[in-house]
Length: 155
Image 1: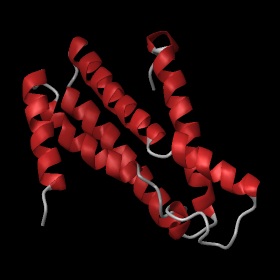
Image 2: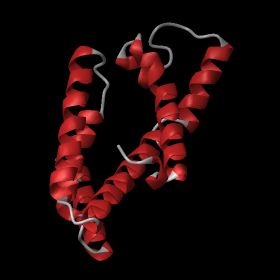
Image 3: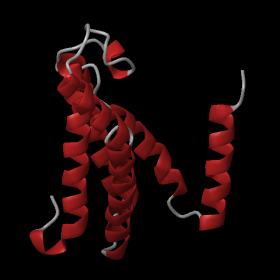
């Protein structure tokens, strides 16, 4: 745990905002089928108020808060790595211990609490991202363009 004096309050506030936004998006899926994500009428007709809430969440929350949380995950990951290097500790050891803990927690949550958990994915991506933390911005841009092209390439 990071000592209170070393915390960056703005990152903590944004992380909390991201989690609340993700909760607003995910809350219906705790009790409803996945089809509800794409079709608000999957469970039957909605009244105007319910349809309005769905439209607001779908328009202003869906994917925005996951993106915010993902960027903060990357920023936090980099801060932890750089702080470890600054004090002469093994960045790899600290980073991979954190990612292993996150992976374990995410898998337990996924298998025993909720099928929509994404923490295990964050852990696996975080482990792979460690390989790129020293790359220049130009290399990171090229790598991201390559990964994007591979992901969206037609079959």
